[in-house]
Length: 472
Image (tube, rainbow, N blue to C red; front, side, top):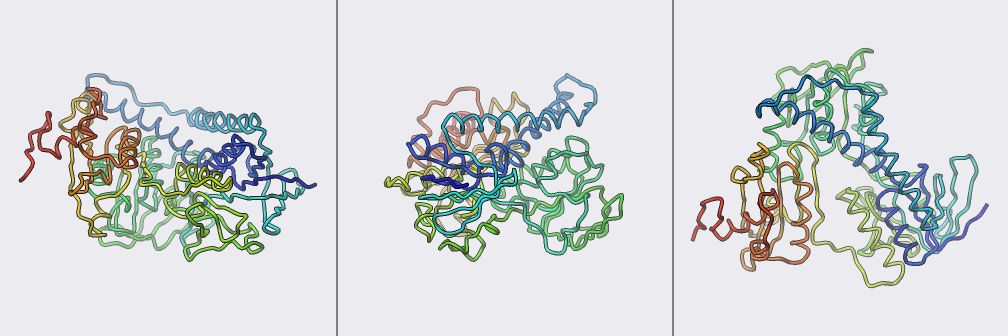
């Protein structure tokens, strides 16, 4: 069986389906290939969406407990794990099913299967029904995403050792859980499991949690995590895991570790992700793989093979769904001959812990590393009326500013709802806004979003809700 198509998209994640849908909207004949029944990829099936559904539940549990301080007391939560799992799966099924309908409405030819390049114009697809289909294409977009990375020597074959995928299946709630990796995935899942009743210990090899974020933001999160997690060990390595049948014995190495041998019911390994490039038949094309395992592309996302483009996690960091979707749209327009390039001034990042951390553009840490002269304007949420009404004054809004032009180079936040607020900062950076633009934009009161305006006011030394004159 053979199919001819103008555009073949390999991978149905946020980058792949965004590319396929746009190409169809712009008049192309499109074939989208993925192993799942419907589009969605890791993000919808095993990542962003199920984790956020569970984090919503975690937030509810925490707020119910904190309500005691406000004169409202609930009983201990009774957790029905089957119902919780059904809720999470229902969210996934609703969204992926909706994407399946959108694919049909757009007349995208959707094939369930695993694609492999025969050459630069032909794919062989092993379909999930056992048959094989050949797809002849004019152009192809590679969007195969990434999988959880493993630690050499530690990835023992045990049902008690989880990665992020198996952790989100929520088979049970272990009494004692070790999370290896203090990045955003590890901390988000730590938040979920601790709220459900697990005693969670986090181990991070580097000096601090969330290596990509500024320390002043992380310190706010870490302060709160110390009240909800059992232990946080930084500059610590896990050197041995041993399955005892009913538990896992772990050997730790680190200056701050007082008990080098500890026992846990389960271990979650969350040390990052690696691109999926194996088994795709790329050796039958001119596509090149770089030193770090990522596919090499230009600013239009074209590989060294003129017929093949690549987007998303397989072309490099940041490995984020919204970055993949934006790249997918650029790749489609490039294929159609439009004058485009993927050159964003800012790609927002969000860590959905409690509190959330979000940033876009230049960070203060990067500015120091690259010796870029900047001015910093910070507004602490201790002076925010809205944060006070929420009893969450532990937030911070920060602007990174170019001194000579007063242009906003970066925006960062920590606090409840930070992820929903970072878009304004991203827009400001993309539009080349200066601090005065942000200061003169009237924000609604009382909201957390007005802390962006207050930070801009502080830059000039006359914030209404805080007295901090600008130093001359």
